[in-house]
Length: 130
Image 1 (spheres, helix red, strand yellow):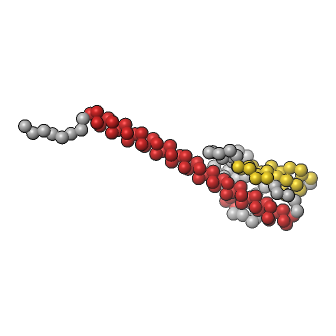
Image 2: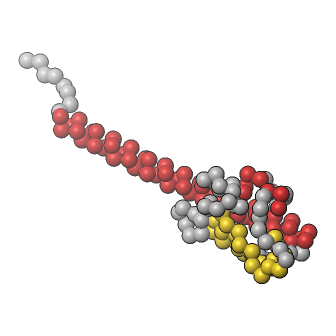
Image 3: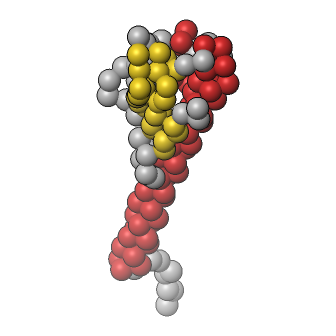
């Protein structure tokens, strides 16, 4: 009598379940890694804006701008850094970046706060040095 070697229905179901679990875990981990990468890009952008404000704008004008209206306000950095991973610029509403100037008189401000809303961590905040 010849015996055939084959998988039982139970073995096939268990294999499918395990593969399904691994696929779900893979995609969950992938989404988490992508969110952390977007957060890192936000931090890089905020740091670039911070140093442009401190080393460029403040050094040249001895005050901070009341708002960042466009890329020409801070020509020292790559204009792409003003755009968050959602595609929204810092001067537009609804993005992950915000610039709040304080102690302003006639468009000349003494301090500011830069903020990036992150997905995996608390907000990333930089405040004026002077």
